[in-house]
Picture (cartoon, rainbow, N blue to C red):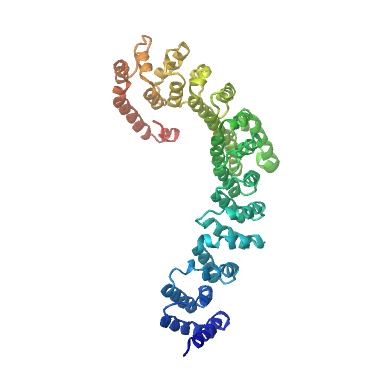
Length: 491
């Protein structure tokens, strides 16, 4: 048989594989396999047809095609003939046959960057949300740069489909493009109804550095978001922005009471029937106590207030990192020392310590925190005082606090907190304590000996002090009521 006759037979079989019925296609692919074995190669014209056969609904046909390609052309995806099949494969993404659609997705991925131009083109043409989602996901998975896809992706930032929009934002983040249109789209999506969109938008903003004051305002609002992860992401972005975000953070910290009142009003308007029998003024100051013995539905509403409290806590933390110790930022933090929420007071104390020497003006206020009956994190307070002024214990204003700590060693409920505070003190403070002639003499013998032995080197006493702390923790653990009262994460 001459070559021309062989080529004609092969072409007829290829056409039959492309357009024939199931029986004809099975016959054709078996005959083609024999031809390829004889000539030890696949004809160029048959490559796209065999590739599309990988998506056939008939499993036997798929297996035959896979076997032939693997045997005679293992790197088929790199051939020009194979690339010509990409548009047809992309069309199969929308197939109603599940195996065909999923197979098309896997095939496109094999082409990687070679498929990008066709993916971009298909994205521009389709309005089908499911198809858009698959195309964007495939673009995101391309290992090469996806710069060519950015304009089309930007257009989809306004999609009304949450899944499409989320995929688009992830793709744009992956593109590493700093296009202003991307930035504007991400800022706009901070107000999207979907928490997933708000979260990925914030993560996308981490790659930019062209923020304005208004942008900072939009991100600070996210600190009060209903979604915990969104709030954390907003604090990360604000920390990256730095000094530019400080004025808006100061506003947030200073508006604590207003924010709470606004949330109460909103809750009254939306869930007013659950407020029956509740003292609103008390609820504003102490929501947990006000909700005592009230419907569990009402207690669920505390989560709405908790987002406000958590947002303020995050704002204080970020302000301490970004405020550069300015008078305005320190004053804003100082105002929070008198907040109604004990957690916010504690966070503020730690934040002032993080500010360091620039918070020296607040030392007197910090010394006085021991007078607050709801405050007992003496360890955190001592750490903050050490950071602000290593010699704080020599000040006259600090003596009432130090004397209070000594007295509290006799208080079984406070002993552990005091021991942890003693451990946090620097050598100079211990030296001053050991020289204090007015120190009460009714403490445990071991503690008195500890104070007297310290001198200039507190490290020598740490093993013994750790032993006392461990013993006190064991004492507390033996009492169920004490176990509920205190946590053991510190120290």
